[in-house]
Length: 409
Image (tube, rainbow, N blue to C red):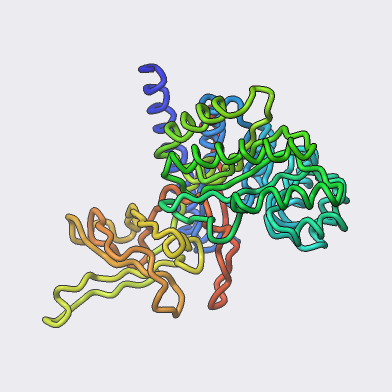
């Protein structure tokens, strides 16, 4: 146990060192006006952290195969790294399926997990050789019957963690009173239902929501088997967070063991668990507003950076995330600034008054235009949700390091 903790500390230090070296490298390139190097926000991704998260998953949920949720972060190099680690992939659209298949991933490692699919998407999945998908509506069964009749189907049941960052219960999943009717209709259409899926919500917190969902999955298994289906898969969904992963994994292990035989195939759809801690975002201060005069003396000074809510900070709105920037002063003004803690409101670059990043951030000293702000844990639902509002590009440079490989930057 002690050795494991010590190794984790060493791994974190090495990762931080490599990420900081990459940040320093890119800042120097920008400040030196290297040709074709633009003064834009940039990511640094440590693929070694992704590897460690995979090891952590296999240690805590050895009997649950991860199918990475591509919607969380579709960075091609990340997807390739996950493919090499042996994960499956949860795809929600034709484009996501194409991205994964282009890496040479076998279609059997892909689940088309979007609960609401147009006919054309089902056709694309069928033609690509993808066979596993989900349903929870009568109308969806009719569409699947027409366009993907040989699919292996998972019935997505209602599950909800009201304390999750984003709960899914209002939109997705068949309530208990509907499952038998859905299964009977699938039987009438000669469709192949092979399992049950659920998703308690993005950023789950409530252990009981997993216990309840797994028990209800057992009930649906029994219903399906009574109708002649051969049930063999349980998909426990996603929503896994770093902070409580051990507790949730233990709950899932125990609940699955209590309700299903060991011959059952267990899968999951983690996203942020793999990527959130692997990416760091670096932004630049492009403007500053100092509060002067008696009227404004109690208001915070303001910083404006070159990325915001409509770019890589959508989680500020969607998940009410509070960001904690780290200041890197620009070399040209290192000695010409006030020392000691300074508080700021930080805004994004667009012309929208809602485009704020942090309402109240404390930096270690005064911040100035051309300084840099570093944001850790930016690998989940950041660039994946970025827009082109106000004409700002959603394309962003990513530098890669691998703290699992010695000497790799």
